[in-house]
Image (cartoon, rainbow, N blue to C red; front, side, top):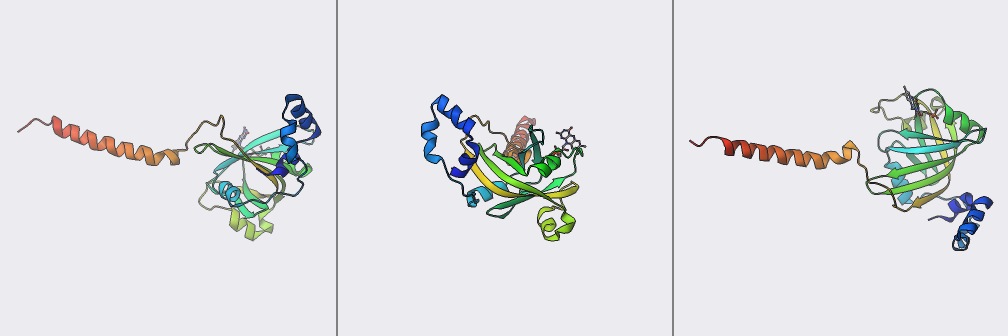
Length: 204
Ligand SMILES: Cc1cc2nc3c(=O)[nH]c(=O)nc-3n(C[C@H](O)[C@H](O)[C@H](O)COP(=O)(O)O)c2cc1C
């Protein structure tokens, strides 16, 4: 666990709530870390293997806004230990995240791995990049095999991250994840059905 995430998250009101609920003392040893976090291999590998995440931005009227982002596994690229990026696919053309981030570049990203009950929270500063202006970034982010129209890139300078405990995460599996197990079962069922059919054949 990094301390800077807690430094950002623990506002005076949060610390008051901790004091009122008896956890301020335990957390006080983590106060004061102001150096930005750098991703280690663990965070980089986790981010780079996700097929989706949630991104929260803040509207200019102060409302939080959260949107799901998805793509082929690995669609979020780790550009360096302090920078990640992903392609923004054309959607309903509401541009809520794009608009919010144009006024306040801070975002919270939430990455889940349901089968292994792991989650990673990441805070960062986001800028949108016109991919026509940055062919190298476009080449890194655009997956020609994935059916989506890429409108722009989101490039995120990492501020801080924090891993969470696995509590209350129900393991869930994608079709691709269950396919190997189901495939083996189907093959075994086909084998047994063939044996059964052969056994039912009249003798002679
Ligand atoms: C045809 C189409 C319709 C969509 N409708 C919705 C919708 O009603 N609500 C929603 O949250 N996302 C919807 N999406 C997904 C969003 O458009 C997409 O996640 C996009 O990134 C939204 O970004 P924003 O929420 O920052 O505006 C739709 C996508 C497509 C392609």
